[in-house]
Image (cartoon, rainbow, N blue to C red; front, side, top):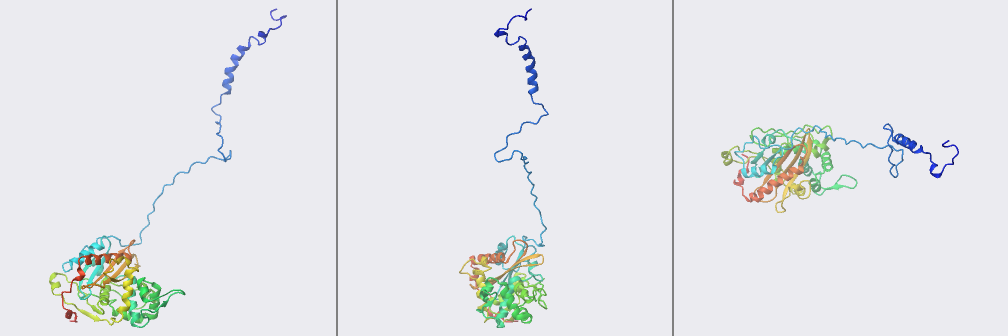
Length: 391
């Protein structure tokens, strides 16, 4: 037989059918070793310091920022054309131009008065200037200071104790518009005494003589229920002051006691025939040297420092900032303490954000600066002082 009695040689150790068997098995093995599409792919090795079983975080989606618009509490705009509807035929156009340029886009009014004669030289935004008044804010402190001096409640140098470690005199209290100081003076004065001087200074009555459309301010019959005399004499709560009333009062301080009827000529003929009219004499001349340092200090280093433009042109003034209902108010009233021509400037800003007594002071300072550059204050009055007598 073919395989019966023979020994296999080395070349015959591998059976002859083995190559055929390998040829049949290898393709099947390759097919079996290939991964199935249903199997999960191999995971990447975990990063250093991260647990192999930690879940992979999905990046958070960016949130869309939505700007919320809140309704404004202010009913008056901060910016507006303040010259609309003004009649200017009888105005001093040099003063008006300076006032309009300084006020710019702000919503407000500017009143400029010759303190020697009581003539209203310009009235920007006459609709606001002639209304029935606004909370005077801290401008009321001038009247409070004069009343306290007149009643011997304080002297110029009297320190008023406010806290255990704080005491102020009148000059510093006016310069920095200190509310607790003037609240304390109001409590010492009481309503009756302060009301007497406030009305004497012209609060609550018309300041002008036959000025078309003018409405008087308001002085209350009693102190406010909330805050009492302290709020009345530090913020002016309960009082409605007009720009014309404040201008007439400041003019009386500037000229040492003559409270004029303010007059507003409507044409050039009335300008040429203008005669000053005295309303009443105020016995305040002896107290003016005590009140003026605080008003000068306000401009030089205090709340009205933005009005300062030259050491050679000193100004006396007082700021006021507060909220009158839904309108934010910024007051500044001033008079120049140099030159031949004496000019009172009252700025009242009405609106919302950006309105303040400091900004009003800056506007007034720019008015004085523009006029000073034109040598306006070197001019002499064109009328005789004898015309200041009551007629």
